[in-house]
Length: 188
Image 1 (cartoon, rainbow, N blue to C red):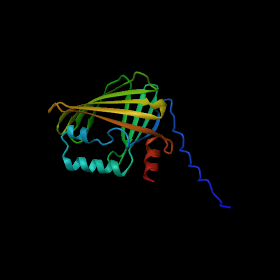
Image 2 (cartoon, helix red, strand yellow):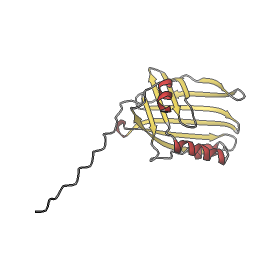
Image 3 (cartoon, rainbow, N blue to C red):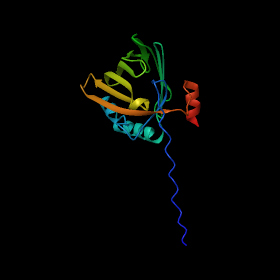
Image 4 (cartoon, rainbow, N blue to C red):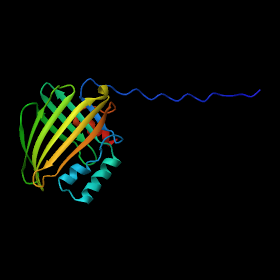
């Protein structure tokens, strides 16, 4: 009598992490949308070699956004091979003026929301080495809380060039919210 063994059952995929709001750490999903910032950087007239280096950095290492919105205080930490803990801190509805190096370049930012749990919009104007740029960064909680959608639009005032990049992020529960924790954990 022949012994027939049934194939082993496939291990079920872990259920997706579901969030009721945008707070927490989000990892860039490079399988969806326009994960590359190429169009954004081209709009700013960044040279091709720098764009390729940026793409290689994002390709080689994961990109994370850590979002904390408590009452009207918003803090976003952007971590990638290119952005080493870039921190954005804003109060909803209040325009913030800061000066960036080099050269004390002015940057204005305003964060607003339609619904604090599921929507953020940050409008920024900043003087770059290639002229004034206007950026709108819209983040929405989508897919029932299993994904964060980012629509990043830029206008180069000097050239009139425009670009919109769409990116998707998935919840990441293996990293703790907070700049030092995020930095320490991502280094490992």
